Image (tube, rainbow, N blue to C red):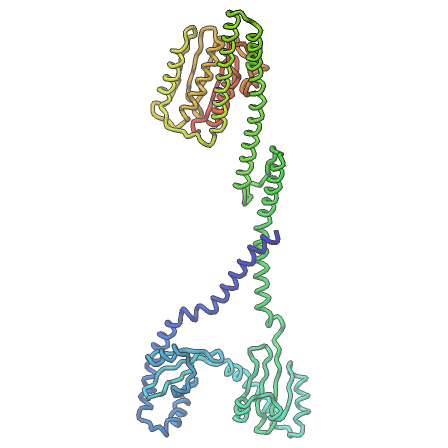
Length: 527
């Protein structure tokens, strides 16, 4: 089960990871042209006005003019030489074609667009950077600290820092500017009076600012985010993995249970336990597979049982005519009387004919026994079909009257049977009735609300009640004498039973009002 679980869980989890990655990356790819169009619509007029403003400015006055313009812009605005731009080849190609080239820096969006001045491009910031956001966040606290230190002599600043550490929830420290961890660019910002923020996106942020134009720098931090916040994305991802795993396991558990049951049943069946069947819940996810296995097992058990029954019966039925043949041959060798020899030859021919008839019935029984998956129902004019079958049998009988009776049969073709097989069943019933009847046989076909009923009555000796449950088994005969006058090998009624079964019906035997046996074959109309 562990292997099956992993083969389901890992692909599902990888799909989720791929989806999360796609959510982060695909919008940038898919919305690139949309963002460029939006930037053009929003800033095309502004760029035109900027180009118009600097078009008459001398090169020496360009930097001064840009500083004047910057005072009226909340975000950065600058002119950059094309040669100084760090652009990829396709970005530079877009820029030279007049498109807006958008990029991100410090979690803020910028764009470059070609200027009317040769070899220059405008650089505009359109969002606040995260550094600026943190600087503004710390501005109020810095102002209050500077006001507090402004009334304290410089030689007592360290003592004041110790006092502040008791107030703040993060460490405050005082140091010389050359003792900081700041790089050159950050040191320039510090000397210019700016607040420098470090590692604000790594949950370990620190703030530095020059204290009252002195050589001292006040450091605030590090500020550690709570562990829950730092690890929340990983916790959520682990929860997602757990929920996916739980869902897969809950789905897989009944499947695995039923598959194990199917495997155990297949092994038992392979060890010749042919009555093995699988019990399954009606909501089982492999219900159809298990049902197919049970149907197959029942069919195989039936076929093997039928084969064993047929094999045993054949050996028994062949023994009598073969023994008579051997006896006739022995007697022929011992006698020289011509009339006796002719009589033995005639008996041998009769035995051979009996063997031939037996083989014919065996072949018919075997053919019917394997037809379940091959029969096809076709539309049948039931009245016409019945009349033809009864008339054919009536013509063959000299001393027996065969009559057909019908009730409430449909006048149009009905998809209700395989006509050749059902004709074989009716023929076997009529043959059996004619064999034992004294003078009259009646065949009756009627239609009820749910089924067709075909019955055959004779006025013969009938069938004792204790034999009625066995007459449909192969090679079963009520007449145990097996004389040649009675005929038959006990396969005709077995074939009728098989045909009824293939049509979804059954066949029964009872006492007839004529005094003999009455066979009733029923099968559903919707078969």
